[in-house]
Amino acid sequence: MGDWHASSNLEEPQSTTTTTTHNPKPYISRTSPQIYPHAAVATSQPLASSIGLHILRSGGNATDASIAIVAALAVTEPCSTGLGGDFFALHYHNETRDVTCVNGSGRSPADIRAVEEIHRLSEEEWMFSPHSVTVPGAARGWEDMLTKHGSGSFTLSQLVEPAALLAEEGFPVSPVTARNWNLGLKGQIHKHHPPQHGSTSLSSNHDPERGPLAGEVFQNPDLARVLRTLGKLGATNGFYTGSTAEALVEAVQSRGGRLSLDDLKAHVSSTFPDPISVEYRGKRLWQVPPNGQGVAGLIALVGLDVLEEEGLVDTTTCREEQRFHVLMEMMRLGFEDARNHVTDPDYETNSSQKSIDWLLDRDRIGTRAKQLYHPTKSNISTQSAHPDPTPGTVSFQVVDNDGNATSVVNSNYMGFGTGIVPTGCGFTLQNRGYGFSREEGHVNGYRPGKRPYH
Image 1 (tube, one colour):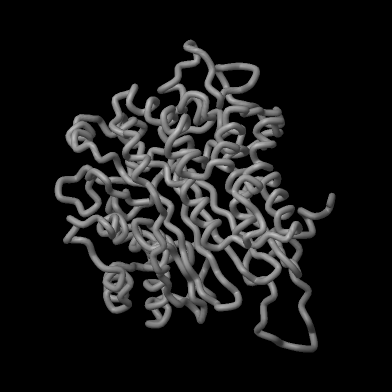
Image 2 (cartoon, helix red, strand yellow):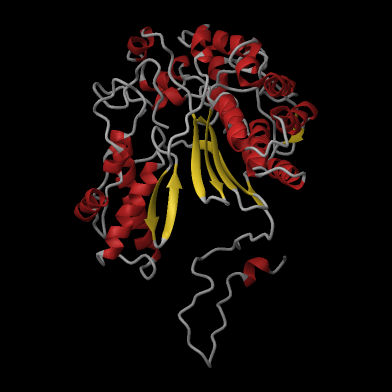
């Protein structure tokens, strides 16, 4: 290990006897791909990964492991994810080779007064306002995913128990998480819960004015209780009604928001839309369809494919800065389309929305890519062409011994979301409503009972 850094910079030995076009290291990297014979888990937290592997070794499938992992991440990385957020998943069934998806995102409050109220707020006020809280879809998404794709060998209660135990007994906080936790505590949570008024369940167990430090053991008994209630009673009785729901609504309404118990009760199911996909270099890539922004990446791939097909760029031979330039330009193309056209496809009054077929039409994308791409400068520079400057979420993947796979996102949106912590719950509420546009007449405009751009 002592010579690893130096040896990683050595040039590949050149053969004097044979010539080959195969390059075993096509990318400059110090990280090797991880290849396993039976199953694999990739998450941002080693403790969550170990819990997922334990479920797989105990006979669970990829979905079972995913539910255990997402609960563990809610405990170990609350500055990115949690029960106050939304849930999305892609599932691959190896036997049938089918890809399906779960959209576990919630909707805006039904109270029409919120529409006028959000337009009175400044941009900064709106960002972390109680009006930006939409119904948290995570709890329902976890349950629906397990019901649809789980092995049947584990109950929801069994799968969230390892996470509940972590929260109850405590865990050492990782360095990157500690940094983001403390930034979010000061920049988001303290906006709604000033430390002089007492600590929240997400403050350090030792100091209400800060979050846990790197390596510090953190306990969250409130979240342990919420997880066990969810596991025992299920999403309807254990989250969307009862004490957790009441605490959630009180936290929003006491700060001027319009979310109600009826809004929570109305969230009776996730949706299961057909996934969307494109081909690039002989591989098919899949995404959850809108209201998610995954379509932006697919648009970018189609645009890049057209530029390569037309000979306008070759990302396999060009200089690194040229490769990055074309990739960024095509992502700007994708984000511009997504920001202008992605909305809740199930919202009945939304007659101006564009279809997925239109968004992913190769001729349309190719024409725009060829018109806008310039090899030495950015021609796609509108505000809508840029991603959010403060992303904050988790994404993880699981493959089981039978070849079934999941890819999961569970998000608060911006770090701790709004930073609002419902009393006795141990998690923050997302600010996904900030994904709505306040531009008059925009297809993604704020309306009651609508899912925002994700």
